[in-house]
Amino acid sequence: MTLREDDIAACAEAIRHGSLSFHAASKLLPASVRDPALALYAFCRLADDAVDLQAEKAAAVLSLQDRLELVYQGRPRDSAADRAFAAVVEDFEMPRALPEALLEGLAWDAMGRRYATLSDLFSYSARVASAVGAMMCVLMRVRDADALARACDLGVAMQLTNIARDVGEDALERRLYLPTDWLEAAGINPEAFLDNPKPTRAIRKLTKQLVMEANRLYIRAEPGIAALPLTARPGIYAARHIYAGIGREVQQAGYDSISTRAHTTRTQKLGWLVLSGVRAAGTLVTPKSPVLFARPLNEVAFLVSAAARTEPSVWTPKDGLFDALSQLAAQDRARKEALIRRPHRLS
Image (cartoon, rainbow, N blue to C red):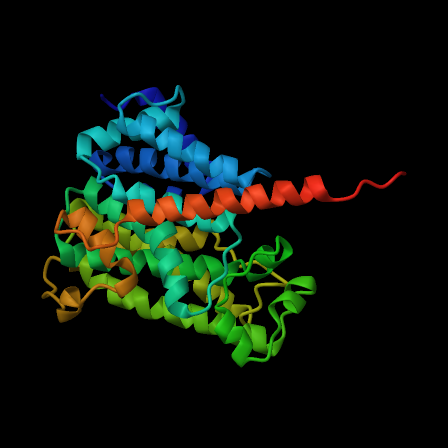
C-alpha cells in the first residue's frame, strides 16, 4: 500500500485548518517524514474531532476502534485519512499499541474523566500526546529507547501547554483537567468553578504550575532532538518552540486563560522556524547531554517499550483500551436507562 498524492493533499488541508502549530512546524520536515506525518496527524485529528464534536461520544469511540481495526487489516475506510494512515502503518510497521493508547485517551475524554494528581494528568497526556510523539519517532525510523523517552517528554509538555491555554474554554464545556488535588489544596470546589469559571488568583496560580511543569519537560526533551535524523531536527525544534511560545503567551496574560485565550502570530511562528533551523545546525557540534539517558517518565514507559519493541510490561495498552471502552459503554448504557426512566411531563 502506498501513500497517494491526493490523499496527502487532503490530509495537509485538514491539518492546515485543524492544527496551525503542527502545520507550521511540518514545513521544516523532510518530505520522507512530512508526508507520513501529515497522514498520521490527519488520522489523529479525525479521531479527536470524531469524539469531541459528537453528542454520542461512546458510539464515536467504538466507531474509531472499528476504523483502526480496518486500518490494521489493510482494508481502510474510503477516506483520505484512513487510506493514508493505513499506508503509513504498513510501510513503517507501526506498533498497534501506539494508536490504541491514543484511543484510550479519547475514551477517557468521552467519559469526562478527571485527574486527581499530576501523575494522573501525565498518564492522560501520555495517551493523547506522547503516543503521537512516539509514532513520529517511528516515522523517522528511530527506535532507540532514550530518544523515544525524550519524545514522550515533549508530548507531555505540549499537552500540558494545551491544557494551560484552554482552562476557560474547557470549563465552558464542563471539562476539567487541572489536578483535583491541586484544586482541593487551593480550597476550590471543582463544580463551583465549572458553574462560574473566573480567573481568580488561585486558578491563575494553578495554571502557572502547569506551564512550569511543561517548561521543565521541554528542557528535558531537548537532548532527544539531537538523536533524531539531522533533516528532521528543525521540524521537531519548531514544534518545541511554537508550543513553548504558547505557554509564554499564557504567562504574558498573567496566567489568565479564562478571560482570554493565548495565541501566537504568524511573525512569531516565522521567528521560531528560523531559530529552529539554527539550533538544529548547532546539534552537529553539541556533545550529548546526560539528560538524554534519563529514565522515561513512569507514565510513558509503556509507549517507549512498544515503540522500541522491547519486552512489554504486564499491563498492555490493549488491556487499558478494553477497560476504558467497557467503562464507557457501561456509562453510556446507564445514561440511556436514566433517560428512559425519567418521568415525562405534559407541556
